[in-house]
Length: 210
Length: 210
DNA sequence: GACGGCATCATCCGATCGGATGATCCACGT
DNA sequence: ACGTGGATCATCCGATCGGATGATGCCGTC
Image (tube, rainbow over all chains, first blue to last red; front, side, top):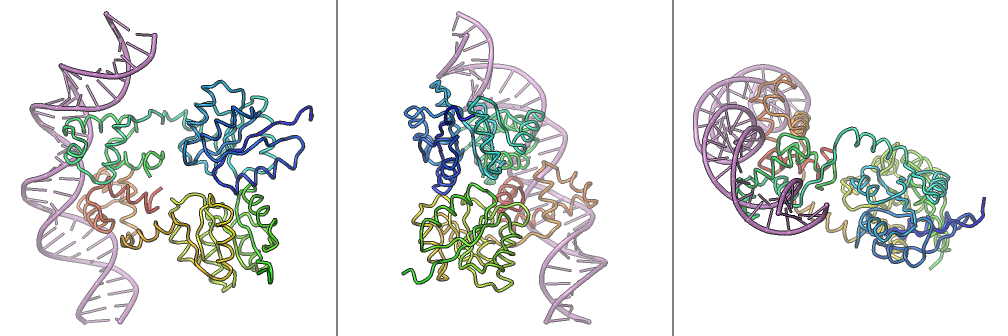
């Protein structure tokens, strides 16, 4: 053990959380916190500059979402491992984050020791998932769940959720009613539902609306 | 200043956040952290035991939601002020928490100094709302928001959200299709919408579904 | 005992939706 | 150059929905 400290970058828009993490890791000689970032952009810049072993990243942040930041880090081929530290397991970004290249995914309410263990594992490139997340993942995989909606489909869906009729949607979007219906049938298929009410419900469940 | 330290109780199910807050306030002689709790029950017990000036409370917690804890503190007539510290401003519990007796409502991503200011204000019994929360509140108040649905109406609405047709709902609930439609028109009126899709959306927004 | 709220049911009808089908155009990547 | 996928449009038709209107029975309250 303790050949060399594992270096960290902490990314979170909440000062409280950054302090908590910093304090927690600073107390262990096994870890070294190189810096903190408050949004995705800073995270990418500091990762390139400081070259940490592990990036502890919150997903929901203003000014450059965490998922984009992870994708950018992966694209640049940086060696750092990204450990996503999120608050709720209901995040609709779970899968995208892992697809984007996150090494692990933990809930913030994990016990301290789990955090340390996870960071060590992440530093070695191991994938670490908190139990809640893991179970969500498998259920996702089992239930196809996943086809993403096109931007136009999301737009239509948003109007549907407001009670807009197909004809009205057509007017608002400057397209024909037929096209609106096409988008609807497509998004029904993608969401696995058969009417607009259920589509809205699924959209809220998955965080597409809300 | 500094006649006596403002005593605090920290309630949050996330060790990380508890550490962050504790560290932050411990660094200021103006404050004294009396203890920590990880859920609503502990919060109530420790509040009664330690009699803190201010309780810093997260809303979303396992084993006894924050709102219940606040209501219980109020019911017991404890003198402590509850300052709700939540992560997102999308919480549907905003209003219930304040109704239950919370003195203030802050987002966790507030700057440190705002936090200190808020705690001081709360200790004096002043109401402190973060700007984002405040604006949400006024919009809620302006939009009457409020007629509650009957249990039968909620039942129907839940099935609607699953994509169930009126006829199918009738079968499931052992009532006639006409009755289903009656419930629907009633709940449309109460929610201020004109079709089932919008009803589902509003239901999710208000936390009736989800 | 009258009244209001809730749940129940019925009928009628126009408006809207959802499914099926087939077609054109454009952008993007191979 | 070709294929793929998104966005666009059209037409037809049966199914479903939402509105209007009116009625009955139950229950708790004043």
